[in-house]
Image (cartoon, rainbow, N blue to C red; front, side, top):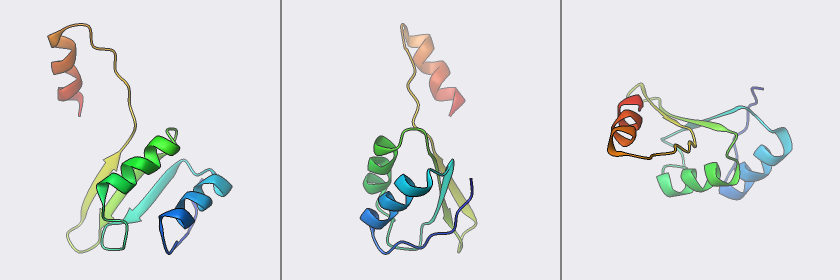
Length: 84
């Protein structure tokens, strides 16, 4: 699902996600949602959502997806890091 939303604050964004249940949220980094901690909180609240943060000035895109990986040994950790 793709939706257009221009929320004024984090609470409004959270309400929009609850109401529309999008698969992906695309946020412009140059707006008020620049704080990575806020964005990570959004992923904790909605773990099924993928989050893309774009910067229209630099053509840079950050992709955040909540993942859990079982690590039994050091090589598992190295493999997880290499997949990033």
